[in-house]
Length: 238
Image (tube, rainbow, N blue to C red):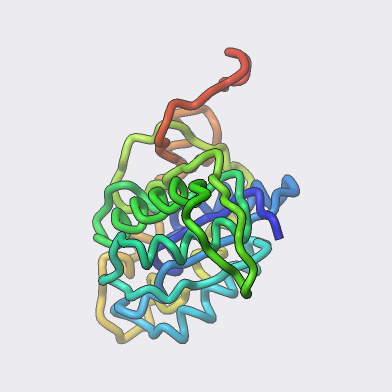
């Protein structure tokens, strides 16, 4: 199956927090979108990897994506090496996305920056014909995505562009709240973390509102780029 967009997250819930409004919008426009999580988030303070698996699939259903897979890398300890790059290359060549979305280039959680660079490097290497991979015993063709964008996460990085996600914030929040074990729950007796506060949950919406305010829309999500954006004419810009 060829996908238009393939979103990677170091952990289940990264994609939902960072760019699920954009994904929901693209799905509504008929784009084929997939999500691949690098780890199962097994080092998370709350819940378990089995619970995260269930939550991730529930979120995928809410967003209407075509596929969701997990590479089962070690949470907190995966590295950017040949072994990990090859596993991602196989997925890129399998789904041949035009656009790849991945973690923030710099963030509070060390896996986010690592995951960002790992996926970006794999996107480049996937286009090299002398790197040979197989899937189900069949040799894969080289494939390099045309565009790699990095969504913004914990840190307020300056976006290079924003996507108007007005009308899709409800779906975004539903996909985030599918991770019931991870976020604010006044009845939970599990340890508190930076992402379990009500303030963090509220921030998902007000950060999107603030980005939207800056571009004169209701809600927006921000991304950074690896190369200059190109438009056909000035009228393409809003």
